Length: 253
Image (cartoon, rainbow, N blue to C red; front, top):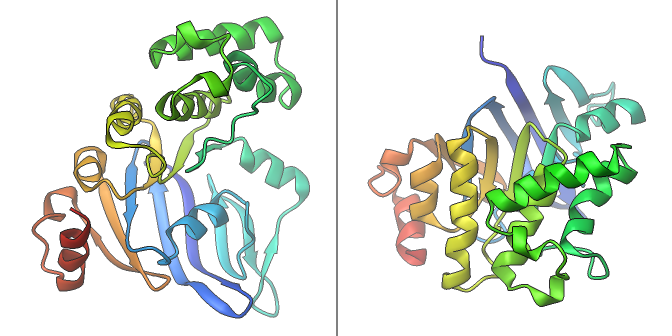
């Protein structure tokens, strides 16, 4: 039986009375790659922020590897598990944001080993060894001693990916990882994610790169107005029966 790493069941989220997610359900199995597409304001990034515990859901269930991290209470609003359960859940995933979020005063290597050493209490030399192996894999080993300001945007984003991978996550989230990059730099970041796809890393990718989504995904989710409007196979992305989806793709392609 294939394990579901993540389950989001009937989740809702509002900000200041504005409904951003409405009864959204999504599950992801180990080794699966799901791309999430849709217009701005459709709830894609909020979905990721709720899944990664950066935002609390108002209603619904959040489950990691069968363990309930948030579930409905007596009044219907979601109640979260203990701090220890949440801490353990956070070890399961890594997150790469639109902005690179690197520490400017740390070298590339320091950025990568900081969390494994200070949070997970790993041996510094072992953390450095693994970091250098990852940097080499992503063609960045010559940048280990550089600082973020000395790197291109594409290199910074690849360092962000390595930093997340250094914590050995079971599932990776990407929130429009190329939106801040020009087309030339975008190619290097997409290549890095494709490498993870070949390694069967479980991923949820919010993206506006339609050809990339078609190439790497097992499933594609189209969101609009806070709900999942359609779920389709990559083969159907550019030839779907859904008029609104076709209109959206036509505008951004």
